[in-house]
Length: 173
Image (cartoon, rainbow, N blue to C red; front, side, top):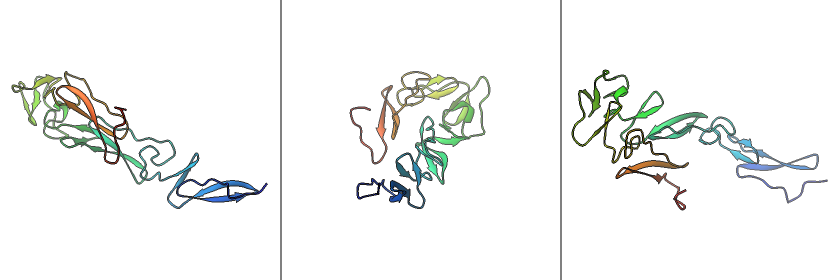
């Protein structure tokens, strides 16, 4: 048999014909992953290798740069050792990644204190607003999640999500 015009070629690839069999070669900077040519240096679902997905932390999104997974924390959160934390309310990272409150203290406004201010709820030593906190939405430890390519939200104590740039919500999925 011979290769003909019917050889399919994925994006970022070029057709090959070896021994009469169609194939493809990926462009420089791309890797053959099943029937696709993917940029494994920046693809969060194939970071560094085919099928190696980067995990997204709570209150952040996964990133892939140079084939290594990383995270980007949403506004108001700080990357403390791979976790996105709110230094204003996180008892283990109160006011900074390396600052923890004592056993009988809570974190309120980035400062260790003995009680939470009015309008906030003590959730495991963190003073949070359960009406808007995505880690304690509507109650303590009620963590909001989101589908791929979206960021979780909490409004009025109810979880939701917003789509990342370039993506749209198709029926809440």
